[in-house]
Length: 78
Length: 142
Image 1 (cartoon, chains in turn orange, cyan):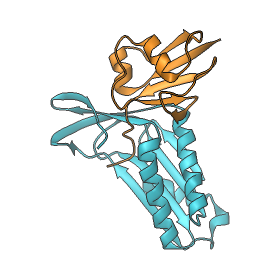
Image 2 (cartoon, one colour):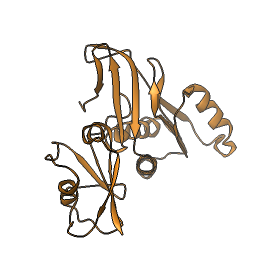
Image 3 (cartoon, helix red, strand yellow):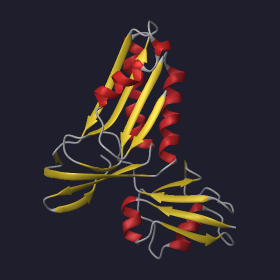
């Protein structure tokens, strides 16, 4: 099993990828997932979702999870 | 209740009329309908907007739109709701989002409609990228 990591919007563009798979071994939190997939520090205000639920960076991740990183949401209308 | 994500343009007024016509059980059960339509402006933050791309996180978006609607239903007396949100490429004057609420009374209809649009703006994962004269830019949260 592995962890699916997804990126959206400006973070997807900066990293140059939308989705990667990583081994779950040695990864315990969403923050660890970022460190595994990116060589730069996580941008300020980055939001995290695990299995499509908003969570904090400290949230634990498990084998088979889908972890997503994205900038603050700008939908709807102003 | 109906929630739709569309990758093509839509006419919000026709959608409201068509949805209501498809709900015969609503007849006589509501005294107020509020409709909010968000439309793409051709200006933002001092620049002319030529086009906009709305990116979203499929499935998570629907999940949060549904959750926000259910929250509104639990807080106010709501007979029915219709939410339509665009994604993909939009031009100025294109509708971005529609929120329609049918309720027994106007206070609930206004409050639920306001709640849904305000909450979806911060919780449903959508991101706007504008194309302006000085190039593309991601819209920052205000």
